[in-house]
Image (tube, rainbow, N blue to C red; front, side):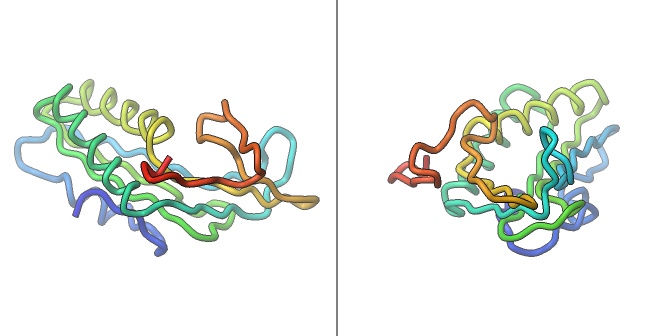
Length: 154
């Protein structure tokens, strides 16, 4: 399964092995980790939640979009949910293509689309408080202070 929402630590090697193939001359990876400092605030840990079934469906959609744009690409994406500590891997993306330029472009496309359309929510826990972060692009806040899921998973 190339598109996974998991509560377990992510193995980069496992994600990469899903896209290895003889016709690929390039494999790019993106590894999103939990950073300690955000906008001057010290993060203690993050909590990710997701509407897992919808999130995996949207990850698969992103893989299909990549295949439409870069027909020779193969994609694997894993996103972790639950409590993540500083330096833990939150998301790993691996994309193989015959040539490096398309592998880089497709990988960038994947992470930007994840932030745009995948129903995954992040709660930041700081030294002096906590907050659900709005959408993953940082352009929307939750009016109720926490995520609300509708039938579309958004």
